Length: 154
Length: 265
Image 1 (tube, rainbow over the protein chains, first blue to last red):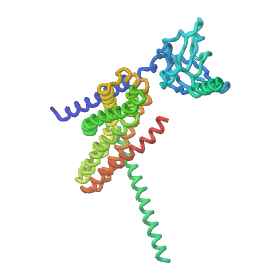
Image 2: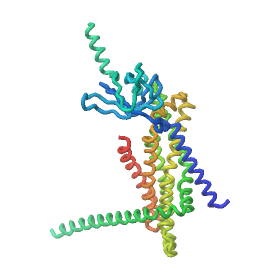
Image 3: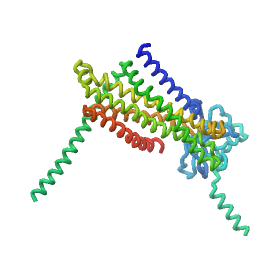
Image 4: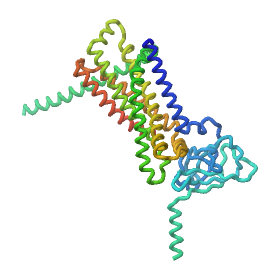
């Protein structure tokens, strides 16, 4: 075989190998498929306390991921935390009186937003605000309440 | 009194000359790199030369990258498992291995190995070509060594390193899988699902690739510059080779800190 041909075959194999590695990293290791190409709509909600919620945390309905948190900011009027979330367009029939709460997966797991559907005929659309929210449970506050109860009962 | 003044003048002269020489060397280096960058498009036209250099720099570095990737992944997950198992969180070993590989260890260790394996060879080759006057011979035949010798090697290094780092990362994750799932008995499903929920495509995978491109540029510039400026003797070439490895390794570690503080802040 000619030397140049051999080099070309080897370089081809090398490039193919790295492309295979890239697709392995994309589809097996990272969340590449995610919600990137699917159409989404954005809604927001005001929370008193978001605890340790971070952007990119999942939004779950009955435990199934239907969207992601895209941004967290302070509302300049109410000084509450405004959480923006993008919901997959496939779930576009959520009632407008649904409520969201910040939950924790497991005792020490990551925090996520859980959505409880309401019963209204009207559905959530782009730019809507979810009125009913429940803040994150902050462990320190729970312990504080427990201590107060504990000292009262003495 | 006079002796003191002359002594001071002497010291100042030494410092001043050293400073001016450094500036001149810096200017020379920048000019060389600038003219090299100008010839890069024409180097793309000579595909055969480029392929030969990708073969030398990339394909021949594969064995060391494959072995290193596998073992780094294996040892990472073994250490991670030993710590995480105390908190009953051994499922997180997958995401820990993948994140540390993709963000830091893959690009950095890959680039360090590559600097030792391919960067040093590049400096030695060019230094010897100069000391045996092959470069002058090319110039005599009106062949531009920038286009014919330097540019293909520069491009090959910059192209080969990111590809090698991708392979390194994939094998490292596979090594982590072997150790934690097949050997230590971490749950298969939890291993992958934790990993893919923690690892982000653009933030982790692509930033690692960007890092490796930056390291490739650094290694290519250092190796070529040292090769071209090597004193044309056996001692000079060996010194230049050593300097390539030392400078590019330190450069990689420093640049990595800067890139990390920009990317993951």
